[in-house]
Amino acid sequence: MSTASTQVPEGRYGRSPDERADHKLKIAGAVLAALLLALVGYFAYHYIGQNKISAEVITFDTRQNSVQVHLEVHKDADATGYCTLRSQSKDGAEVGRADFHFDTHATRIDKVVTLRTTSKGTTAELLGCHAD
Image: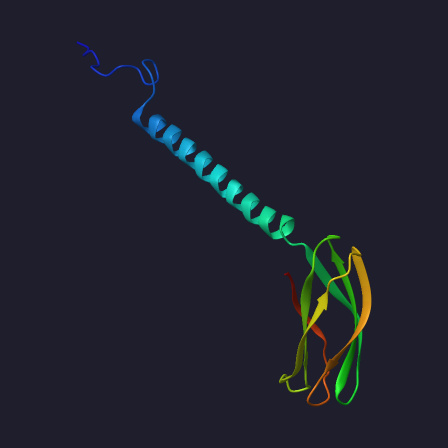
């Protein structure tokens, strides 16, 4: 004699509990991924879109008590602000730091600035630029 099975055939009458859990995990993962993407976009917009002044050190020439820095600044025409430069000695000690202000209406400023130092500097480092 055969006995009849009391369980329904698998997959015949809807999803199994494991499939429902997998579906909920996929939805939760998609929501978290969308939130992460929105957060990255928000920070990228505020970093790139709101930064009105950017600059780079092209070259520098060290002297005994100063460093000549060739600085190239890109900014909006109406933006005013400053860039902070510093110089360090051979042993890594900071020997000079100064802010250089830019208030012209030009969008590109190519200028050689002099950073005074307390002793011979071996570097010229751009720490950052900020709008006023």
